[in-house]
Image 1 (cartoon, rainbow, N blue to C red):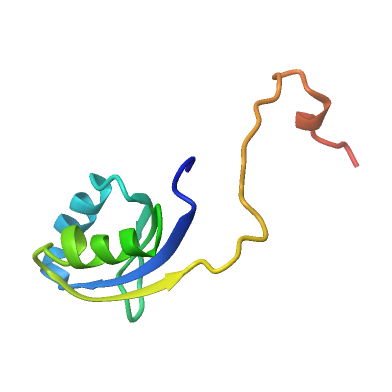
Image 2: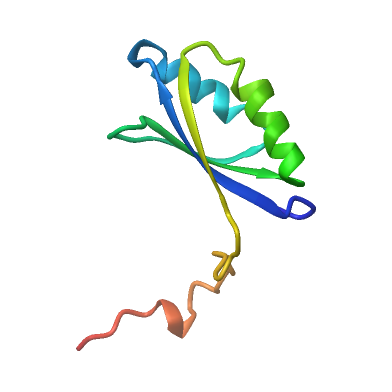
Length: 102
């Protein structure tokens, strides 16, 4: 996201009863670029994008930390990106979209 160079994966453990409500709340947060329910030690994984480490701290201790049902958060800040997924549109008749008959 332009102007927000820092990102972190947040592994969130919510109480089972709050899983849906926490997920719905996270979907409304501007800092969250991606959110998914998952299984394992954590039951929600999100990617948060912020301007700097102070912004990450503010998000963790503010909006995220104040959500009812959040029991634990583990943050994994991105230290260096080696690839960023981007999209480009291709015309429908593009040779890149044709299926090989091999």
